[in-house]
Length: 118
Image 1: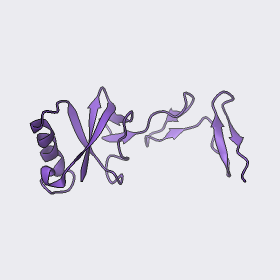
Image 2: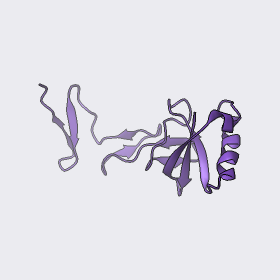
Image 3: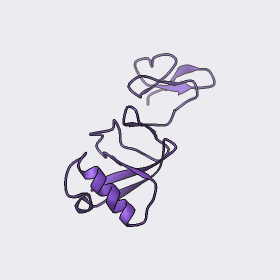
Image 4: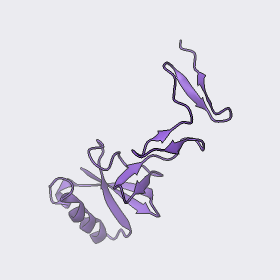
């Protein structure tokens, strides 16, 4: 099965599954324009891009609310916290690195809080 994400203003609004036969039975990137033509033929408008369930291309599997960077041709997750910034690899980075162990981010304190184990 192939997966296609609808992109509106750089944000994924929905993801659908398309049968491999309706994508020409081939592999990405050859399958993408065939799948896009199939999607249009069933009456779905908009911009549709193929996404990889196993993250084999376009960085990561596109989920609803994910962003698409057309220049880099990658999908990336929504910003987890307002203080986190996007790095050049399209990964969100906290203001301070996560310590070793079991920690969670506290946005109100802008710091890591240790989570007890057990």
